[in-house]
Length: 456
Image 1 (tube, rainbow, N blue to C red):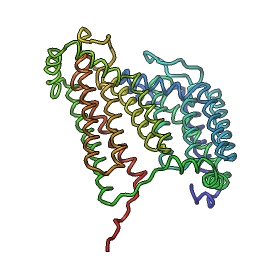
Image 2 (image 1 turned 120 degrees about the vertical axis):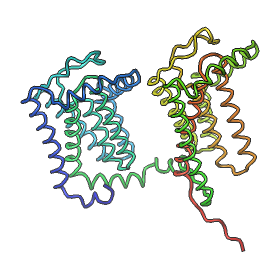
Image 3 (image 1 turned 90 degrees about the horizontal axis):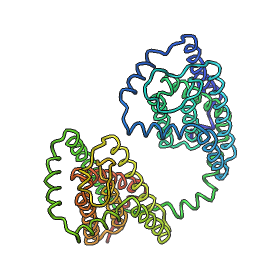
Image 4 (image 1 turned 135 degrees about the vertical axis):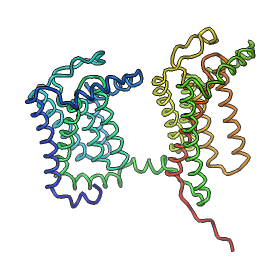
């Protein structure tokens, strides 16, 4: 919207919004008269039900919890409206409330009016469902949130996140067998139309309120004082950072793909798994075992998050800048999510349990969560500290320490019998991708290119 909101007419949003609502209602009428699912519905249901996997089950169940019940219909709208009031945007809060209520009432009305039966005959239905399949309430809730945030915070990444969230919700509802594909399409059309129709008469007022809020709210002062971090670099240094980011992402992605294909095909790099394991088994000793257990605990799921928390909070308090601690925390969270998704999808078995020296672990082996966490923490921390120091010796020392820490973390997991070598290599390659993304975001957000001073 931006400055164009002042010039928006009330005709095209009204007509386009009503057209979307009419399409949703018309789709419901056709469904009710037809009495049977469309070919598109049945073919899509067969496709998604035939490709179920534990990882997708978990993701779909998470989306089921996020998109329904009191959380999505009450808690999220209340928190969002409270945030808008805190940001001194009462008109925006009113718009959010209006879209939420009208959308919810419309969905309930159409469910009762058309009374479409839920999908039947699907084995292993993963969730309980109530009456009324058209339109999908979960998708309507997701679209409502996406539209409200997109309209009130008109940034490209907000719209992109909203679209991804809504599409993922649509996929999850059909994957779980709770809805036909046309149920999700109808819900999205209905809510988009309602949000646009309600936005039209308020567009200019909402835009003016947003501008006033950005200019005067205390959060802006806090943001500029504590969150924003800028640094000046010459064009050459700026180019080096961008090339480094691309190199990290590219090399990490290529090596991870190669490792993954080796694991899936049980060839390639997996040839080193057994020899390395046998070598480490022969090297076992009581003293070395104690050292490796200590390393496993330090880089484990309890100690490492506490270390990250202390580092991030302490860093923020000492420097009074939140940007780099937030980047570190975001990188660590990204690593955890990736490890869970990839691990559940590949579901590789660990080495035999009789080789494990610190308790039995029957979870997935690929990739190693310990190594991924250690690599993310050490590499990202090293970059965030060393990127502000241009001395070569300090950079070499910091990277050396990070490398040694990653090797020790990997050796501890292999030595203690919990992972194969390719599990650890995959974790390091993922960390390279995460590091490249951090470098790219940090460079884009903080670096300002300056011309070198001209000396007489």
